[in-house]
Structure formats: structure tokens, C-alpha cells
Length: 360
Image (cartoon, rainbow, N blue to C red; front, side, top):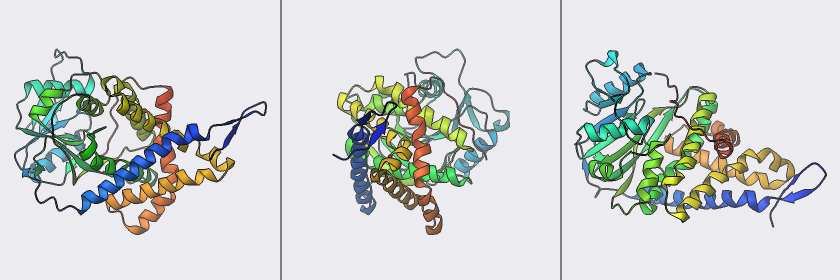
């Protein structure tokens, strides 16, 4: 048995190897399956994929990062030839000419925070058959979309902070191959900052559930129903802004992980729920990595895996080779910081929604 020992006071040792390794092994095998499918997906020509230019753009915002929002609106108008519908909680004077809709305070539903705003827009704002949902810092690099019920695009986070770049590159390498695999399994999660949902599917699933991660809750509700839909992963890219500071990134990841745990009540398939829990537990191996290295050679395997994920992320983001080497060296640290909030969420969940500060 491959194992390592954690020594407690009193000199007694316990073998925790399999307990800690099992979730990581399961999710690592899952990731390699996803990576294989992502590679297979990249070799397809996708010539038979029908596309459309007739879609609505909805941007969800709290209205605080006005300069960031203005840049996104200008990009959508000039590059995508679309005047986006902006859903916000307050009137934005600086965007008086834009299509801004303020969610009324008296609107009531089960959803809160962004989910409440999305639910109001679903009910009260007409849209075309296809809607592209964006965050206030999302810059799409395409003018047409696949004509599918659910389309997940590829995120390209930008930052000038080397450590944050390493963390984001690791995250992209970890998650993007899974988005491709969801074409076979159905989406186990969604990134709401760049996604297309048809009006029919949105009305069938709705946003009307309390969650601090409304996109993830939508995915859980979707795979728990018998709804028929066509999911498509798109390699078309959407540029976003990474958190400004590591502290902001940690808070963001804490919210994400807490949201997944909170949203499990919307997931009614026991096997998938068990797998999601295993994925959440898999990050503990990186938090215990320093101890594992001290205890023996076993710590090298998570380190190698973190480096591979970072290398894949660099390839997806088309990062220059010299920069990639630096990011790969930082991969163990990036994985540690990435998973730390997930472990914290297992011990203490975040209950309230807080937006992540962005810079123009």
C-alpha cells in the first residue's frame, strides 16, 4: 500500500494514505479522460456545426466597475455588432445611452443576488432564441455562436501579477478539458461569464433558486431533470480579467467552492453528487503537500500533475514557451493557493455573495 504517516502527539501514527489519495486519484483519472476527449475534440473540423448571428447579449453587473463595463459594452457594439442588454441593481448614469435595465426592488422570487437579477430578466426582458450571458469584464472574440441549447466558451483570464497568472493558468488547464468532456456526460458545472442558453431551456430550468453561484446551481438543476438539450463546448475565446490581488482571488475561490457545496441540494442524482464531493476533497492533497514531501516520495505525484495541468493551461491560453517554463515552476504553489479556499469551504462555507473587484 502506498501511504505516508501523520504523527500526532503521543507518538501514535495513523495511515491516511488511501483516505487522502483516493479522491485525488479519482479526479486525476477523470481529468486525463477529459484531456483525451479535449484533444479528440480539437482534431475535429466542426464543419457541420450550425451557427447563428442572431442572438441577444445580456451583461449582468452590480454597476460598480463602470469603466470595465463601458469597455465591455463598446467591445460588444464594435466587435460583435451587438448592443448588449445590461441588467443591474442601480441606474448607471455613465451609460445613459446604453440599453440598461434596473431590477426593481419590489421584485420577489426565491433566488437572490445575481440569480434574482437573471430571473427578473428572464421573465420581464424579451430576448431572441439564443442569449449570450456575459460578466461585466467578458470580451467575446467571435461574432457568431453555435446553434445549440447550451454553449460553453473558453475563458482567457488576463493579469499582470505573475502568481495570479500561474494560478489562473493552472485553473484553465484543470477545467477547460472537462468542459469538452461534458459533451458526453452533461455539464457538471458551468461558467456563467461566457455561456449561451436558449430561451426554451432557460424557461424550463429558470434561475429561481437561492445560490451564491447561480451558474453552478443552474447546471445542477439541469442534470437533475429529464430536460432534453444539446450541449456544445466551443474553443472560441472570451477574455476576462483575473482578480486584482491574491486576497481577492482567495475570496472568489472560497465563494465558488462554498457555492458548489451549498448547491448540492439542487443535485438529485446520488452518483453525480458523490463524485462532486470526491472532487471537492481531492484538493486536500495539495494543502498537505509540504507534509507529504517531508514524509516521503509520494508528494512528487501531485507536483507533477500540477505542472502538467499548468502546461496544458499554457497551451490553451497560447502563452509563450519561456513564460510557460516559469509558470510550470510555480505550479505547485499555484495549486496550493487554488485549492486552499476549497478546503476552507469544507470547514466553513461562505453564505453571502460578494463581487470580485476588477480593473479596467
